[in-house]
Amino acid sequence: MLKHLFVIGCTAAFVGGFVTGKSAFAGHHTDLDAQVNCLADNIYWEARNQPTKGMIAVALVTRNRVLDDRYPNTYCGVVEQGPTRESWKTPGTYYPIKNRCQFSWYCDGKSDIIPEYDLDVYELARIIAFKVVGRSPMKDFTKGATHYHATYVQPAWAETKTRTIRIKDHIFYRWEK
Image: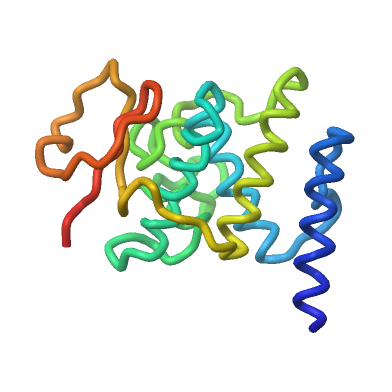
């Protein structure tokens, strides 16, 4: 019952945050929050210029990877997946190797601070992330997609995957087991 009330409260907070522009999870540090943040960041940086359906599709690809035993089993693990190198300044601290991550934004060397003019888009990404991480019933219209790319690139891996759907300028693929 308490968990149910927490979810209801968080949902209301997200809707309120969408209206007010303030983050619903500000000041909270739970594992759920961390997973929502990782997924929201991925949705925003990968699909901020896409329609809502495209943003949801990126979330579903990330979820499909979490559920696939070939990938890490958390949203943060999937988003942050890629080779790392140890810091020369701080031994024991590791950083992703530039341009070698599963999701290019994560290790492109650019700032990951959300611009103020895009906070409403980021809040939408957080709402989508909260629904996906919270396991709200959501039909997977990507048909199990685990990969996607923009239409203006032709990655070599695309030939080895099953194309499932195109949404605006993203093409989605499923990696058959």
